[in-house]
Image (tube, rainbow, N blue to C red; front, side, top):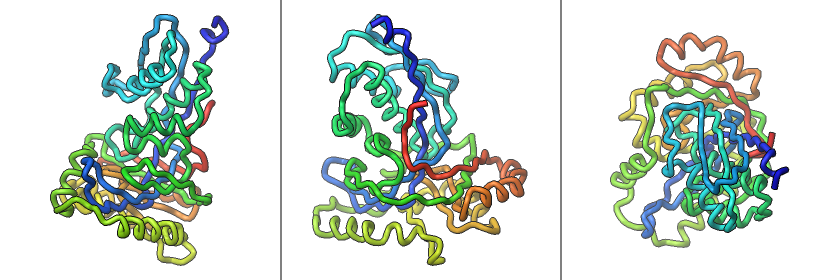
Length: 311
């Protein structure tokens, strides 16, 4: 136990973007039936874990805009894992925050999964990925994706996952107004009120949509066919009421070498894809002042083959 007490584990917790987000309809359980492609990018938070003997979960962070109490997903995840494993000791957790909050990049979901993975190792629990994914699904719809990460098809409410065999080399530019955030729950509610007038019960239709994404999803993301397209249904209800999103999409559309552009998740972060990271870096350098003058923070990222990793 003394050895464990002196152990510090550091976990890299990356963001995601949506390369496809299709809302099939509203389910009777209150969630929405989704068909998505999610991809990890190398904009990451970092979590540090150490055991404490007090049986408490203590969270601290360099971000002043986050609650560090029991409503934080990191604390919820740690307490759930502690309850599942029936252990006596706790953990001191420190979050170094780089992923913006309320941005459509699922930073909170990534942190939740990173907590399950990090504490599983710190506490020597040896839970397999199936158990961790099961726990993750009780915490939030995006969280199971991050247990494996990389690029995956995500169905159901997000908990039905299928790994994709792909290693895109795109460069990514992200734009986000630091003063704007979007509620995912409110965005889905607005979409549902506008487009989902009844519960979806047609299983054959759902499976056909899934099959179509399996068969054609990666083809739509192959820039060699010159028809690179990204679908995000939530953009339909966010773009025209959120000036930040509308302006970001316009700016990205005007960049010389943009292959495609979209909003990520429920926004307000928007992104553009480029043939490689060097092209993205050149575009950001050339347009950094323009982005800043319009009120945006900006990043260049690459796609990650894996999700959460130990440092």
